[in-house]
Length: 189
Image (cartoon, rainbow, N blue to C red; front, side):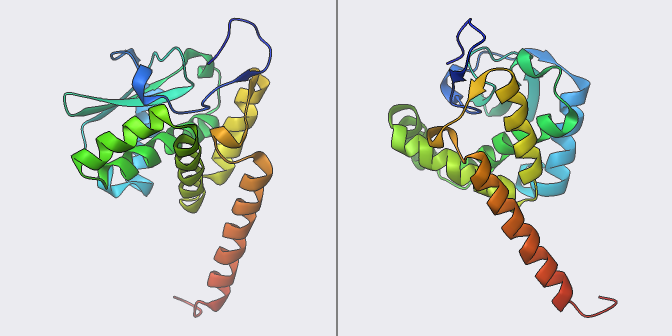
């Protein structure tokens, strides 16, 4: 978790469901980004009670469920981040929420317990989530997020998700597939 010193800190770079505190300070920019991301890429979440605010201390972003409401909290160290950087982190959290909603209550509780207890499960979950972020077209946003927080002194390993070269390759592969698909589409379609 983040230390007080400004040297490289290893963190579960985005996710820590178990340590998010109650709702912090709402912010219009965060709410606008959240609404836009949901509208564009997360139709399953459109009717979900979901809020976002500043206020998590021991993670960069985290989400929790309180009384049926989903709450995403963003660390204050990201206040100076660009919109693209915030979109990368928030899209990651939304992918976690979307994946969790595909499970039943028992499966979800078991997954959360495994996430908290198993380094290997957590690593697999983070890497799968980042692949989904890239599939949805937010790979460059994810790269911007990682680069920004690395400048703040955070470091990332495979345990925290995909590494920068892996993200770059996945983004390039997605772009290549899109170009090929566009080339096969009939003119005027």
